[in-house]
Image (cartoon, rainbow, N blue to C red):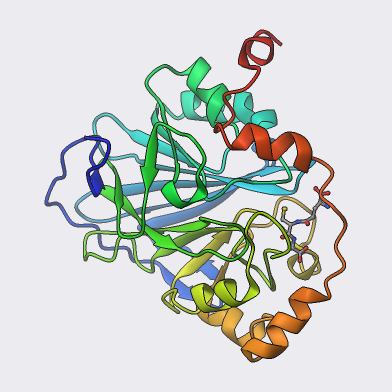
Amino acid sequence: MLRLRCLWWTSCSSSSLHSNRQFLNSTIKSSSSSSLFRSSKMEAVSYSTQSSSSKKLLFRQLFEKESSTYTYLLADASHPDKPALLVDPVDKTVDRDLSLIKDLGLKLIYAINTHVHADHVTGSGLIKTKVPGVKSIISKASKASADLHVEAGDKIQFGDFYLEVRATPGHTLGCVTYITGDDADQPQPRMAFTGDALLIRGCGRTDFQGGSSEQLYESIFTLPKDTFIYPAMITKGSRKWMLKEPFDCQVSTVGEEMLYNPRLTKDEETFKSIMENLKLSYPKMIDVAVPANMVCGLQDLESKAAA
Ligand SMILES: N[C@@H](CCC(=O)N[C@@H](CSS)C(=O)NCC(=O)O)C(=O)O
């Protein structure tokens, strides 16, 4: 079951979702059948899509200040079980995330990681101790342990929606991007959870954990252009137009990044040279985070759960 190319939690229905949303330069325009709302209390920005057939994707962008990490909550809110997943949860904000999930009446089924993060500890281990039955997910290529390992082409089903796995290595070994499905009954435009591979006006560094500038450049350019990107972290490049962090929804498209990202508008050789000369400091948490994330946050859990 675990090695199925499609991870089925619940059966699919043939109902279709027709989003009436219009997307222009990463702006979400509300229409009568969709809504955009913000909750500063939860440090989240959210929207949902709803069609005449009442299929509804629930979405939240949640922020963790210390590591500047974004966690994403997705759920099939129109499914009777309201199955939900978290992409890149952080250990420090697990209680907030679970409280939101409880308030919304969702059933968390997956805690998904885009890669072995170096700047924070994943929340997937802690979530597993608090919500029995939740499965942690990471790529097989990351060589980290988890309940489920995914590879390019795999599909992660939650209700009538799914995420497709794309290999986007280069920031670290085994980085993947999770993209919503491209079938007619899936949200349009597609949404990509890029981890640290493709950031808004930036990209992940490539100087440790099996990083490769060449691989990163090539893998980013495989992503479909009209897809929204939701990165795992905020960068200097995208901070500059936030009104008041962290409450502005941070989103771009692959195509917009091809046009305006100061690293990706360059040819591959120039890109490699930029990446070699970033002169970034060693991440403060790396010596704690990487070993913990190699076991998907399943270290030291008794003390954390009791805290
Ligand atoms: N200050 C942070 C580390 C910042 C950093 O290096 N971020 C990484 C992703 S987490 S390893 C990165 O790829 N940055 C890209 C960039 O261009 O900044 C800390 O000490 O935690």
